[in-house]
Length: 347
Image 1 (cartoon, one colour):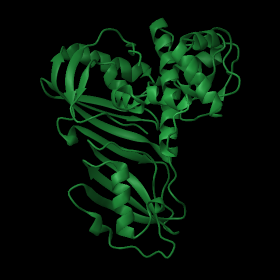
Image 2 (cartoon, helix red, strand yellow):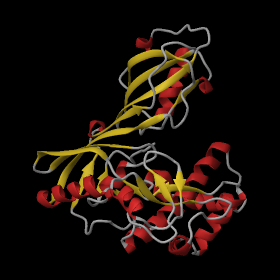
Image 3 (tube, one colour):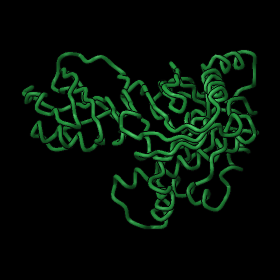
Image 4 (cartoon, one colour):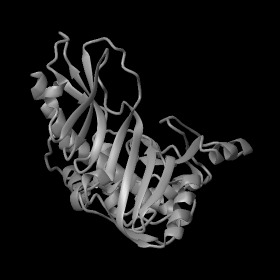
C-alpha cells in the first residue's frame, strides 16, 4: 500500500478514536420512503458492538428464514454505534414481535412494510458523529483545517478497510490473478480491493501535483451525487462555474477492460501512476475478470460539517458523506488518528 499524501499540508494532530463504541456513530440516510404495503418488512435497527452480517443472521433466525431472506443496503462496522435498515422477505406478511430482537447489541427502532427488497447501495449516504480523544495539536490550526475542508472538500480516498488487515487484500488479489482459487464472496472483495488500490494511486499522483480538484486536459467529469460521467470536452467558463459550485468533480479510473475514457494530460497522468509492475498485474487481472472501465469522483465535500471541542483534548466532528465514501478521508487530512476499536467503514 502506498502512503497517501495530504492535500492541505503537514499533519496537525495525533489522536485516538473509538475508545468506546459511542465515539463512532453512523446513521444511514435512507434513499426512499417505505410504501407501507408489500411483503418485505423494513426494520430500522440501532446496533452496538455488532457487525452487519451478524445482525442479519440474528434477524434471519428471528424470522425463521434462510440468511438470503434478509437484505441490507450497506455494511456498517462492528466497533461503533450505527443505525441502518434491513429488509425481511415475509410473503405471508406474518412476522414475530420485533421487540424480541432487542438485546444488548440490537434495538429495533421502527418496522414497516415495503413492496420491494432492500438492495445493496440503496441509501442516500451516511451521517457520522466522531469523537477524537487524547488530541495533541494546536486547536486553532485544527479549526482552520476543518473550515478549509468544509469549503474546498477533500480527496475521495478509498479507506484502509477496503484493503483488509495490514493491507492484505491486494497481495491476495495478486495471488488470485495468478491462479489461487477463492470463494465467490472472497473474489468479489479482492476485485474491489485491486480496483481501489489503483484508484488511490491515481488520486495520490494528483494530490502530489495539486490538481485533485481542478481540471486537466482530457478530463472526465462526474456529476455530483451520481455515477453519470461526461467528457472530455474543451475547458469553458461553464465548466469552471460548475466545478466551483461542486456540481461536477474530476474523476479517476476504476480499472477494467475497455478503453480508458480520459485523454490528453489526464490519461497520461492516470497511466503513469499505475505503470509499475504490481499495478500492471492488477490491471491485467481486472481485465481478465471482465470488469468494465468505470469512474469515481476524485473530490468529496462533506455535508453539514460541524465540530466542537468537548474538552481541550477532545474534539467532536459531525458530517454526512455520500454512499461509498469514507470517514477516514476526513481524519486523514488532520493527522495520525489511532483507531483503538478497529477500522472504520463506509458504504
